[in-house]
Length: 128
Image 1 (cartoon, one colour):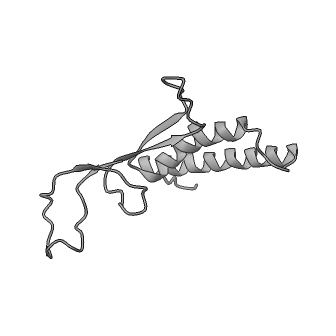
Image 2 (cartoon, rainbow, N blue to C red):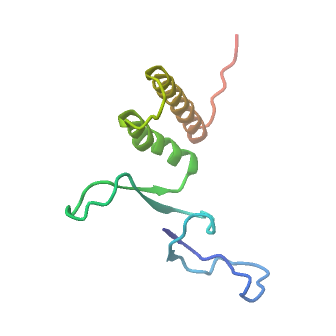
Image 3 (spheres, rainbow, N blue to C red):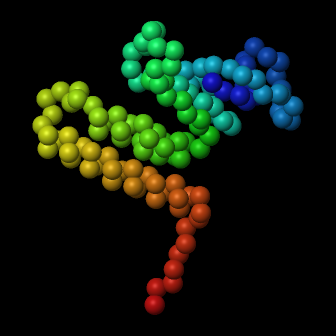
């Protein structure tokens, strides 16, 4: 779900310069046709729909505006807990699952460091 000005389509008259006078519109896409220019949100269902429950809490929602920060949040709050709780590992051994979770944690730490350095800037210290 996007709330941003629509892109100019090929069928529209040729416009040499866009002056920002297009108003944002609410639109829905799979993400493959509409580039993210400002903020958007997406929905992800973790489980099958249980229509007997009014709110089954299986729908995950997240707003996306900064892709790296969003990926970090997804890995930390959604995917890492889902991987840890999953029983669907196929033929993987317990050691392979543990190795995967360890690699995931290290990757999340690296991603967190990258996001923090981009936010705050990189501080270089003089070596004595």
